[in-house]
Length: 490
Image (cartoon, rainbow, N blue to C red):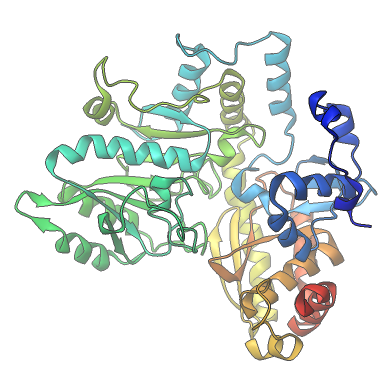
């Protein structure tokens, strides 16, 4: 009997009386029942994806640091890192203490008709980590909302000049709300949507290629200069883990300023210390007009992001009493979220976690280099910086073709999907290691450990990778197909 079959639709009387689950009941749900609720009331198709990867039955009891504890007592090492959210790891004790302090003092969470002291304090703390003149923040609840705010502030400043276009890079990821979605081409997430920024208002260049940027700007000249509002760039590519050559960001910003184009540096995934600097752009001597932050800013416990700019740019866009609230959000700057953000920044400072992210990232890269030397035909390259690394794998399509015919099965879009999925599932099922991959880069295994990960925990990852690579792609693929045979044949 499936989990879904066990859950009966509530009667009319139950609906009238709501028949709600209590929090204690919700926490105590067995995994089969919980997944039935997920399928019935959230997204049954996403649950199928989790099931293909062997993760739908991961019955989680708790999490601490880099580890997830399952109800059967097994410990799982989390190298997926919430796609960048878990810089401090799961349930950092100081973040929990900050939340508890807010509860004990009954700290005000929401007020919309007056300022909140914690909002100003958080914005001040953010500014202490950034170079001048990046002093003014808009507090958001996600990375895409921070990028939305960045786009809008640039539009307010530039559209009166007749500028109507954004410059971005092919294969970028900036978010899934309508504005950033228009600039996101890392994977096919635009199909079926009306773009917030029409396609004719988006100019593309090649990432890491300053000549391509120069050519893109030259194509957009008109009698008043050029039509480009702002250029937005991921300081390290979130999907492909591509680190641009040293100096690229500096040259990009210089070229934009020479042409009256504002610069937005998207640090949503790699900011907040992940590369060994507070922001990845700080490895160079460059300052953007706008920077966006999120993910680790919430300490792994809160939805929190920020768009940070200069007072001068803010004043040009919103600098009067009539316009100062043109861009806002219901959940911008909630009290406890700000408290967690404040404490997160203090944890980074007090525990020297930014420096640690760089050092432990170097250790991770050195161990991965050992694997690359051992498996030169299987590992094409290593990418990334600090606590954001990726392994580019050499997948021979013929290996998968012998095990599975995907042409009539929509669950396996490409052979690369099968192969990368097989590797991820092997690491989890054989070794209790969670990794992830992105739809736009199916030959890359992403590793995003928290900054507090230990050398011993990295050694455990390397041993697991060594075992899976040593067994071979064919072995992993066959096991993966057997696990999903009903879907393949169905």
